[in-house]
Length: 338
Ligand SMILES: N[C@@H](CCC(=O)N[C@@H](CS)C(=O)NCC(=O)O)C(=O)O
Image (cartoon, rainbow, N blue to C red; front, side, top):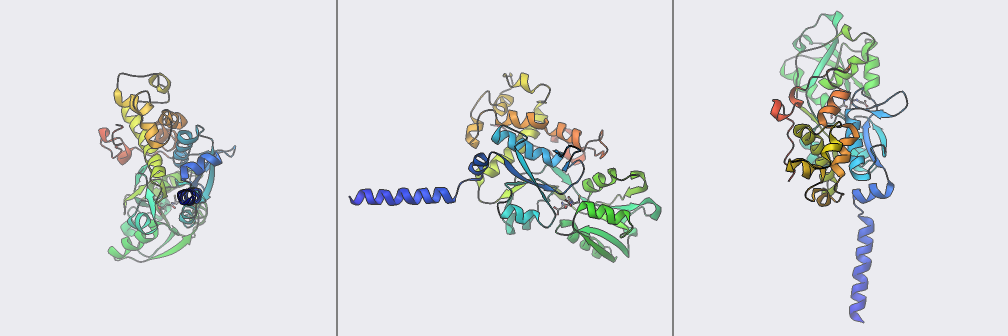
């Protein structure tokens, strides 16, 4: 009798605990869609197209994770967030993943309690000015008015840079990129400062991009990457290894064009482990064997995602630079799939 009461209590406790602490993976599967936080709109990174379908380099991360976990890259509910609202959206559980040109910093990781699962774009902060101003270096910006997005790392970097260079500026605080664009073009500020990739994306959407110059100075390190809430390591692993799968696929020569053929088995054991024809990596993540195949099928490998959304053949026109594979002199380096 005593034994059964004891077991009953334990079972109830386990049920309650289980219910209260459903993992993010369980939540996402039960919902049948991934709640992915993105920006309110930065061309090439995340913005709805003419048909209202979200497209972009950050959007591709959401789609790859949805494909890996749910088998459907379109099973994503995109939640637009600003520089200010993104962290509350993640902390509160409104989103499962934030993929929004967000810089991995100490305080966001440690103090805000998030886990960055990797870096999908190594960036740095830059400045854009109207060519008519005749400015060719950031060191000539003493006394300028500067459009700056609130809640971003760029606010503090700006202050540091001007202080170190003994210059003053007048900030024009702005909430979204669209508003910054508008204000800058209307002449409400002399300078727009943000991540250099964001400047390139913003300039590409101008009617006359050639009228605007991105100055040569890069004043900070902005490693941009997807992040999740701290405390659900399995979910962090899923995000981390989905990103790694895209990067490894490029290194290993797995592309959207040859994926199907390679998924039938190759003579390269690492490709086979990545694509699930050998080993049990998917199972270790709590997924099936084909998780990475589906992630790669969603938008191609990392290089294909880069080229299609923000690369040199697109209006954004970004070179790979630091975001080249480590084998090409860049920093993209996926740990081994073994
Ligand atoms: N990387 C910086 C800045 C990120 C940021 O907010 N960039 C702007 C300028 S490109 C942006 O994404 N805006 C999009 C929006 O307003 O929704 C950070 O993490 O704080």
